Amino acid sequence: MTSGAPRSDAGSRQARPTYAGPAEARPHTLRRSLRALPKAHLHLHFTGSMRHQTLLELADRDRIHLPDQLVSDWPPQLSAADEKGWFRFQRLYDVARSVLRTEADVRRLVREAAEDDVRDGGRWLEIQVDPSGYAVRFGNITAFTDLVLDAAREAERETGLGIAVVIAANRTRHPLDARILARLAAKYADRGVVGFGLSNDERRGMTEEFAHAFAIAERAGLMLVPHGGELRGPDHIERVLRSLRPTRLGHGVRTGEDPDLLRRVIDAGVALEVCPTSNVSLGVYSDLSSVPLPSLLAAGATIALGADDPLLFGSRLAGQYATMRAAHDLSDATLAELARMSFRASRAPEELRARALADIDEWLEASPVADDGPDEV
Ligand SMILES: [Zn+2]
Image 1 (spheres, rainbow, N blue to C red):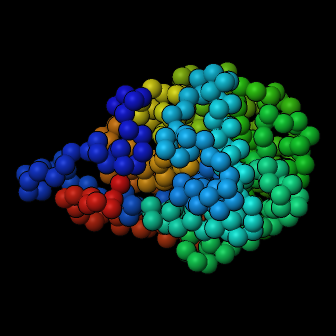
Image 2 (image 1 turned 120 degrees about the vertical axis):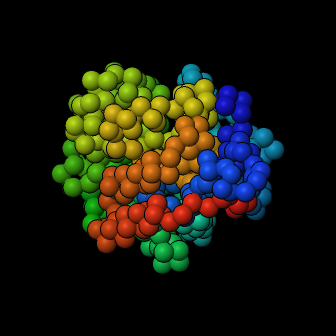
Image 3 (image 1 turned 90 degrees about the vertical axis):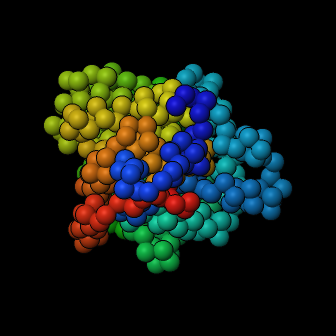
């Protein structure tokens, strides 16, 4: 596929061979349903998880003007190759954030994100949120965090998905803001918050200046999950490792550009949250087959596939597995191992994890079906 090829889940369906005869005659088309494969989703942003239809409905309700890129030209053509491109991406994000105006809107977003993950085989979700972006509208960062956590509990009850929250600071803001958020995350450490992240343009801000915030989160026993190794390569990953001591790297997909560094990441047990459609949408790679998943797997990296921002990239959780299956001809055994790794790298409760791992084995032991059918990815 080229960068101009379809990037949505629908696109990946079109790219697959169509049913053309008896299954016995075409063993290569036998495949297990990826939606039936249990998964943990470890890289999903709160705002970016919004359904496109919900964005349209909420904007319509409050007469909020949406740019064409979020309406007729959706999903938008993006590129973060330069800072201007990233700025345009952030502008769309700001517009999406602006449509969430009531508590009911927040509850709807979390419930729909959970429903979509369940439909895609999700059993466990760690959703990432920066409460400061919503503080003014919902009172303050504590009130908003309370609301998100309550919405998550409600969505768990309604959908059966296990949900935890990662509080993320913004690297384009002052490091003192990150400390405030780290203290907030620490306060909720045993009450639904499992990690502390750092997001936004990797090329901005001084990573070292966020070390203090990450130390606060580390002392609280939280996972440390900063973004790194997406828009920048090994030099920056090195700095993230040294300064922030990550449990997982948000993306980290470029770690393999330095084999010694990759070895260190693997030896340190740092998992990579690889988000293939995001990488291609933002121009990190020109096409899906260039996302270096096979070489990372071959080296022994622990990888959890994630959707990052489905609202802007047009592809959700199962779509990541489907695009990688199609681009790299991954076997079902490899896909099952990817799913296992997503649970191993998560903070899912032991019982949920054990059940999911057993169900993944069962998925792989079952006979593949001849065709995914129209509802499968
Ligand atoms: Zn992200």
